Image 1 (cartoon, helix red, strand yellow):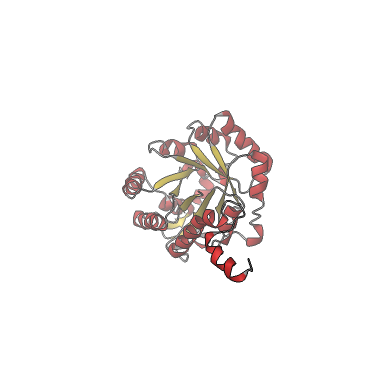
Image 2 (spheres, rainbow, N blue to C red):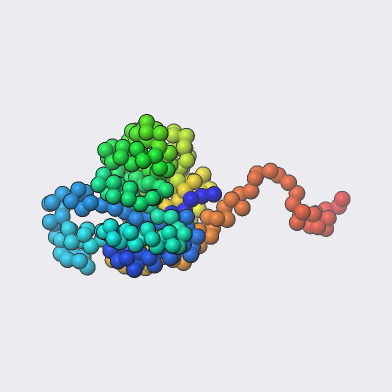
Length: 275
């Protein structure tokens, strides 16, 4: 059965109450996990970037905006306890080695490599040495770059699953290129998932699973009009409910491929055919 992750990311806007409401939404919809993003601000961004002007609810610089979005250890402890209490898994994509080491304080089952980090081999080595099942997003990447990342995980004997993705927010429908799921499957002979950033519904996620995707990751939000760069590429609670409902039906409707006469067809056959 497909593994479904509700990507909270930074859509909590630095508010633990919003984070909990998003966790509740994912749990109610029937998701397997929720995912966050963890950054060490001064490691991920240059001083020039952080000092640049940027209007946000937290101030007028990029530093104030980034710090406003980042959860502390206290808040992640609260998230960990809340998810355990509500019996839903959580994990996070780290954007630097310090953040990955920070996440080791929690007994997480999965790791995630964000598309932006796929070429950060130092970080990949730190993640792979944990030998946890790792989802690796492949947006903005060539086959050769993906091969280099995969080799790190193979050398460390770390289980991994690639995720086809397009890293624009929101993604254009004509750039979904879902046939890449089959391309990656043929090239790497591993499980291939899909991480979606589209703004329109969830047809692409359904189509991805029909093409063989073994995991789905989709951004979620309470309201697409909220502040934040990822909100427009996210599903609101009702959309998430419909997505999970329909993804869970796929195995049922695909069947086993064996041509047969169903018991429900026999009365119709007797009525409509001359036997």
